[in-house]
Amino acid sequence: MSEQSGEATSRLDRRKARTRAALIHAAQAFLAAGTLNVPIVEITEAADVGMGSFYNHFETKEELFRAAVEDALEVFGALLDELSTSLEDPALAFAQSFRLFGRMHRRNPELSKVLLNDTAALVRSGHGLAPRQSRDIEAAVRVGRFNVRDPQLAHAIVAGAALGLGQLLHAQPDRDDAEATDQVTEDLLRMLGVPAGEAEAVARRPLPDLDDISRRHDAA
Amino acid sequence: MSEQSGEATSRLDRRKARTRAALIHAAQAFLAAGTLNVPIVEITEAADVGMGSFYNHFETKEELFRAAVEDALEVFGALLDELSTSLEDPALAFAQSFRLFGRMHRRNPELSKVLLNDTAALVRSGHGLAPRQSRDIEAAVRVGRFNVRDPQLAHAIVAGAALGLGQLLHAQPDRDDAEATDQVTEDLLRMLGVPAGEAEAVARRPLPDLDDISRRHDAA
Image (cartoon, rainbow over all chains, first blue to last red; front, side, top):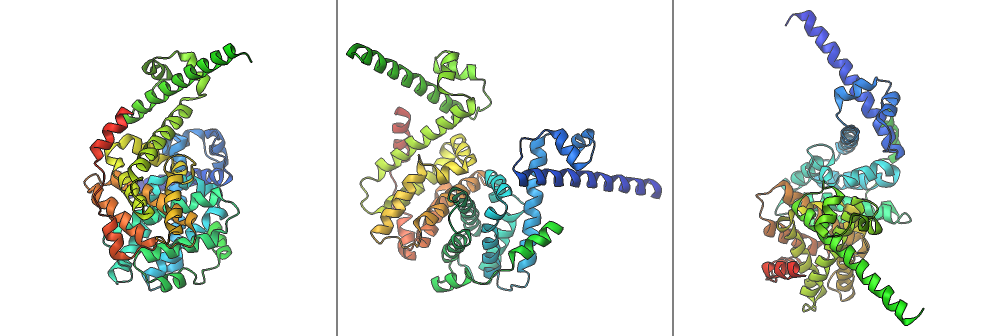
């Protein structure tokens, strides 16, 4: 392949990537607004791309929405990672990420509901939160902070608990989401082998500022 | 209302109930076979009722399938209750039901998958397993067997863990489902305040015979 056609290819690749990103961004806006029952043409208009471009990237609207959720989970997961890099103790990193995730349900209820409908992705996916939770659990087991026989089973419980908590927070809108999330975190930490008093303390440590997080998240 | 018309009404009611039961039973057979993409006319034929009867009971196929799942969960829940009536200790009843539920995913994978897709029903529903799990947790807290601050939060974790376990068992078909389920049960018992050694023992007690259960279930 000549250098010139290589350049043309990469320019085309970049344009394709931009179109895909525009579609995903538009779909996320509809998700956030809770408008899932939207014709494809409205999505392509919001993304400012041609109708034909849609089908170059996605076969169905459902496929686009799934990609939009995965992308949102990945961005959220990367943000949780960034916020916990300063925490050397993987048990603290695990707890902080779980507590911030629990606080997402009320802050972004539509995204939350879409996530909660896709149990398999939350528990089994190789993207987003599942692999990060697994990584933190395994790291904490390695350094002796967690004591579990089977980290994969422990993760299945943790991911399931995150789902159950989200469902409960939607079912009980008057419940204090921060308090509930911290209590669930404490219970899970005990289950993972952290002594009771320490589990309670770890689940109530100060958290990074959430509005600051949203601002950075929106700017991204 | 004369006695005669009262009798006619109740005969009509009985016939309506039989038609509804026949539709639900047929839908459960399609669920069990994994055939969800079936035309309504095939369901009414399998149920041996007229096509018009369908719309007297359900507006959509989805509504029928939802009713079929709820009915299956209710039957399964009643069976778990029956099997645990001889257990006076609510912690033992809780553990036995959780362990039998965990063993359902491989025995009835299609029903399992339908249940796992309906997270909200498993966690929040007033029918089926959720209210029974809540009842067992509350009873165990009352007699001092479990030690949790908020039984509703504990139930959200337990219901979520049941989901996460089911997803994992489908994702890893080679994993020993009984062993995994018992380990998750043990972890949850510890989280609920049962001392470690006792949690391990409770999660490995002999269970009622599952084939005997299936036979009774099929005969019902």
